Length: 146
Image (cartoon, one colour):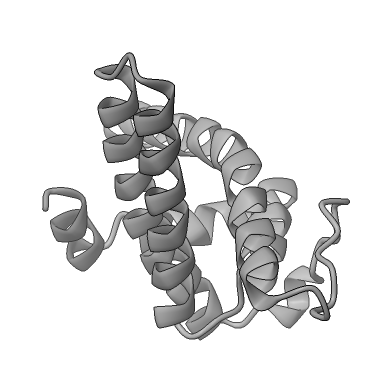
């Protein structure tokens, strides 16, 4: 029974990662746009990092940021769903994007690197299991209940 629960949990998190990668690409784009016109452009083309190049500490950082960004995304969707005014919706989306970028940077990484790692996790089932174990750690669970 515990094995089934873990599989279901891993499946839900896999779906969350797939959905989140689309959102996280906009994190990097938002970050680049705020950097100014002379900043190097972020390519939304998949640029996966080598899974061997991702150490445990980095994967833990990404997992911690992922939990926080996921929470921001959930709050954003809830707030936007309750509104009819398009300008108000856009403002909430922009604020949420800025918060996501801030969370990723506060975790000690650039949004592009964060996106690359999530793409690599998505493509590597072994890395997914390790990533999910970090996402499920008690300190991250506490963040989800904030």
